[in-house]
Picture 1: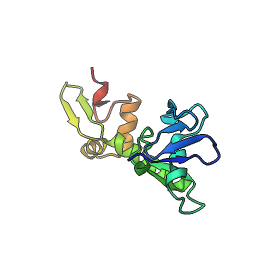
Picture 2: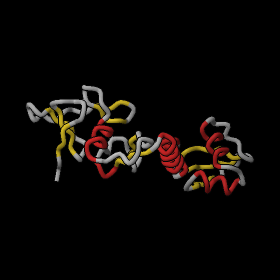
Picture 3: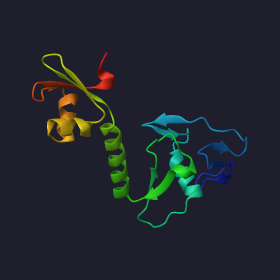
Picture 4: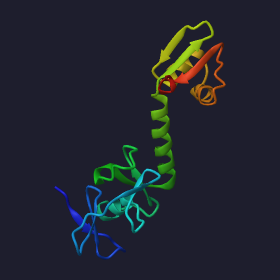
Amino acid sequence: MEIWKPIKDLPGYSVSNEGKIKKDSTGQIMVLSHNGGYARITITKHVHRLVAEAFIEKPSIEKCWVDHIDGNRGNNNVNNLRWVTPSENCLAYGYKSRRLNRMKKIKATYIDGNELIFNSRQECAMYFNCSDSEIHYNKLYKKGNKKGWILQKVKDIV
């Protein structure tokens, strides 16, 4: 069930636990725009922050940042948000992005035409006995030569 609460410091507007904003005088749901992956309204407030301030009690003064638990900045449901410290936010973001990057398939093509497909950067790194960051560098900058192998992200293959 959708629950609405007034937005602190923004009279005349309410925020829902599902991440929606409405103008109280008209009942009109505000149209969200996106900036850097974050949903915003024309009064330039981050929606995830408004939802957290209305529905989640801040546990301490140090926890002043709002984190999207699933890493999806467009999912502003109260169940996907939590208060974190700035350092926790950086760690969470780094972990999520690293995890997603490591799950991308990599194709290795040898100079003789032989091909291997790896399910992740880590799997590829284990095969070549190197770090996954070295695999990332080789495929990103097309330095491409890892013991005679050219590395590509699978989505880059046409």
